[in-house]
Length: 251
Image 1 (tube, rainbow, N blue to C red):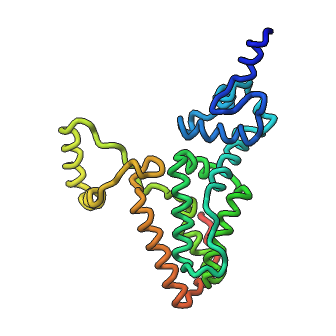
Image 2: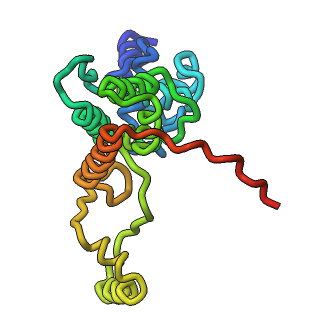
Image 3: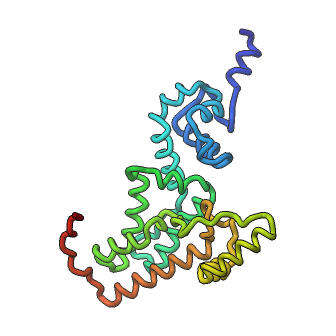
């Protein structure tokens, strides 16, 4: 092989990653770039290998399998979050939690595939536990006891990760105006309150994390309602109800 051919082979790159300098960090970085550009469904070990200009087996020296790769990708996204407010900060705990959650949502806006990857994790990684620890610490430092904090985290649910489960699927309206009018008329006849609620606010699909009508204003509204309610219960000295007895076994 001539010098020119060797140079061309060694210089084969995609996204700035040289085959000769393949590292775990490069693999994760390029996997994120691929998912950002084409979505999570486009990510496979083969498509990533093609992007990097290597054979798929070369990736397994740096990451065990695709599931492990997704773990690393999620951790990298969480590493983008700003540091939590230090203990003793004058910021109210409600505001600190709100800022932390909305910061997480902003990271998901930058990487719209990440919410799906988070949903599929079967066990939390150290970075995921670090994030949960930071939110729980804010609540506990704010004076909430362990029981109310536990209930608060369950109430916040996936919002802690910057997204929510959709209330109901919302397919796009029919393109044909006549069909669309007929559909709205049918909705108004049978489900008038559902239609009224759906039409009460303007939804911007460009601000949604995932295919839903959950835009940023609605997300922030839900966070505020939850945090205000948690604060009221904390101020009232809330204690958990007695544990329910064992549930009867179905016959």
